Every structure is written in C-alpha cells, then in structure tokens.
Length: 215
Image (tube, rainbow, N blue to C red; front, side, top):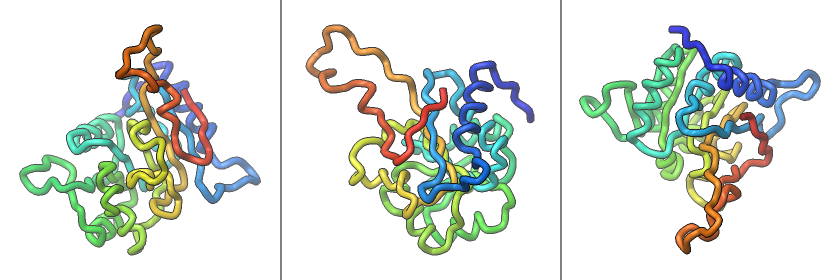
C-alpha cells in the first residue's frame, strides 16, 4: 500500500532525513543520530515516521508509545501507512486480548521473535522501559535498533533519573537513529491560572545530547 504524503509531511520527512542520514566522512556518533518532529495534532506525525523509516531503509524499528491503548492503534497506523514486515508488541496483551500484533513481555521471547525477520517493527510502551523489559532483552543479546521512534516525546523529557528516561540512553536501549515526535505547544494565556503557572513549551525539551528540530 502506497500512501501519498501531504506537502508539509514531505517537507518534514526531508528534514528528518537531513538530520538522520550519515554524512560522508563523519560516520555515526557514539550517541547515535537524533532529531525530533514538532507538529500539531492531526498533522500526520505517524505517517512522517513511517515514511522516514522507509526512506532510511530501517529494517529494525522500535516504536515507543505512552499508553497500552495506543500500542495497537499505532501498529495499525504503521501498517496502513505502508510499513511491511513482521510486527511485534512488547506489552501484557495476549491471545484474544490482542488482535494484532503478537505480544510478549519475555526478553528471551522478544529476542527469538526479532532474530529472523529481515524487516521487523516492535511497538512498546514506556512502561516496558520503566520495568526494564527492553533493557534486559538488550543485555541478553537483542540487536541494536536501526531506528527508534519516540511518540509523545514530551512525556519522557526532564529528569534523567525517571525510569523511562532510559529511552535516551544509548547504553540501555541502543539505536543508530532516534526520531522523537511531539505536539506543538499551545501558547500560554496572558493571565495563566495557578494550575498553569510554571508550565510552558520549555517543559517539553528532549533529554538527549543532540536536540535538533525537523518540522
């Protein structure tokens, strides 16, 4: 299935490729290549990620989402967007609870399931990082990801001591490239209420050593 991107999506994908493509003579830095897409809700950030993975020829892709409900939705969206190959979920859904893809929380099983497919996309929640599932799989021999896509990345920004901040740590969840996506911040009102005090766009900064914006 071929999906036609809208002009702003094409522009975003081109920008992503400029930041995540290996430059002649420079190679891949130890922390990997990193960038982010900042766009409004409904602008097609998921399709931008699918298209970027395709253009980068990323065979092993890890997609991280904040909630279990979004995992299956994201898997369906990637398939509808044209992503081919095996799809696997790292979550507690099993059997009748999971329409697609097959899911596991066993690190050894995850290694086995991702060992053979030439193209594989794994969908996981931040909780799987917080509980160390992905880290244990990596320590046991799970291969490095060609591309990690971090959805709603503002949820894993800030304090590096948070369990899910490991998504930014190359020693715990290594990836050649990281693409983070988040919603564009809404302007603050001129007279913010007490509940809104202290909340601004700056609270959504990514905790990575290379912060670049593709939007």
